[in-house]
Length: 217
Ligand code: G3P
Image (cartoon, rainbow, N blue to C red):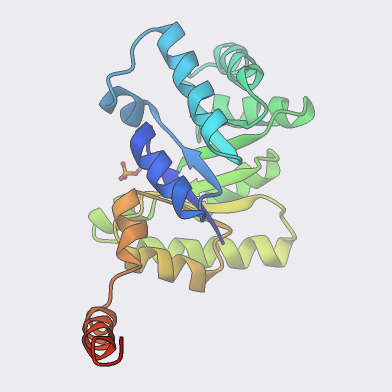
């Protein structure tokens, strides 16, 4: 399973990249706004900065909702850097646009996916990635991880090549469960990735080893 970072924060991207386990980055309009990035030139520079930091796929999201607008925006984003994947919302015009991008050699990440039916449409449109939002499903009292299992089953049975990119990750346990469910990619906040490191027995064991080492060095 590939690890993507779900952020537009450059210092967090650097920290995850320095760990040596980062395979890509996903952004969205909310994450870009959180970093205070405003205006076409600043947005363009930010995406290029991320692409130059990470050797992997970088999702940049369109904000148009009509076919012509999505296609124009996606062409512009894809031309910024070879690492850019155009993130397109799961709406009717988005499906049409994703098929156009597929036919024209531009890779897409279908976002805001909350059902298996939507994941089937994304695969039929040739999306490179489909992004089911686990945490937001959990927030509504349903089980987000069940959707990952269901999409995995459908894609395997049907032979769809679209990669399952589990998104809206809330904690380290989500990452482990995504790996178990057969997600191809997990896009995570940095805290959730660092949470994988933690185990009290590791800390206790290391303290004991270091204490005992004093006896022979
Ligand atoms: O980037 C899409 C997704 O990961 C958003 O997550 O935490 O806003 O539900 P969240």
